[in-house]
Length: 190
Image (cartoon, rainbow, N blue to C red; front, side, top):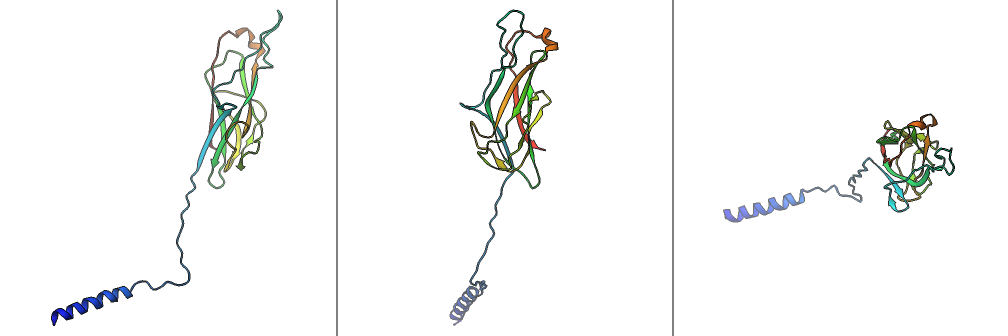
């Protein structure tokens, strides 16, 4: 008899717990969805053939004795600046450009960027379309970048225009040679 009573008590206890579960169900149910959008900043320089590797800026040699090198045609606008950015609220980014290595004495490189061509979306930056002299200290080329993307590749983003100029007062210090200069683009917060 004890065995039957114990079995019966166990069955009642089991079913009692089963019926004691959450009975708050109704015509609606809900749960949370977590969305994590991470801050990022990417920059790239593209040519018609893909990732930019180099451009050539060389003055023209004179065609007649008594004339100097012609720096006016030492220009290049074959490269495009692409970037992607997600910022925190009220944050803006800037793209700075610096130059490594030294140029021949008296020679200067200037850089300008066009307005974004509109192949992307969002708050693209404001370009400095006036040529700025490159240096190791860097220049601000694109400012006020928000959350955006410019599109990727050739003819997307901002067209870059490089020009070579000569400080004529230093012409006497100019020497022959092949000079290779590295130009570095960096995207950071303001």
